[in-house]
Image (cartoon, rainbow, N blue to C red):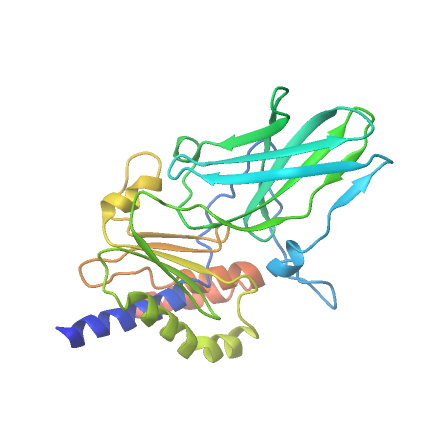
Length: 293
């Protein structure tokens, strides 16, 4: 039994490795604004804006002559019902007339929402309603930035606030992280699942480096469910019983139900890499391998 469990875990890890390099082509999420342009590969010596340290590392910026004050800010996850942002801010030149929060699960993929102001508390707040509006899985990264315009037309963009996650507090999870991947494993899966995925990623690291000239700029995430009931929590509408996973470059990762032998979509990893490099040859090659299998 232990041998079979170990084999399943290793197979799971290898499939997740394959999985996290391919975008399935889902529609990009965008509220209160135009859709984000499709990313293109950086050329020459230009900064790699798919690298989170580059994309989210830009300093605060401003236009005009105002002095801006930003006090406490908060992020609260309400999975599966979205999340809330709050912040206190002011301009020396006049009242703030427009406040927007912009958030991102992966570099170059953004969503924005206008904020409301409470004059009694001096707090700006914005809410995204989660499952009511869109299907976004738990444990994706939530990096965010506030943007303000005052009555005199001065503007201020904060630096990015990094490190938040769309935490699922309705289920029990274990979190694993290595040089290659971040893995979230729901309670009920074998205890060594996360470690096996990380080991498989490490074992395949040079294979992917040789195949594509490098690894993903943004460390991918694998969210692994033990049952379909929990998996359905974040998916809008009626759930197709044949769907056991979903991968998106918008999230920078893959979500899978692991049960009855550890079935995982075997091409998701390569799709994420193909989306980043725009190498269309990758997907037909994998399709042929699927046919052969």
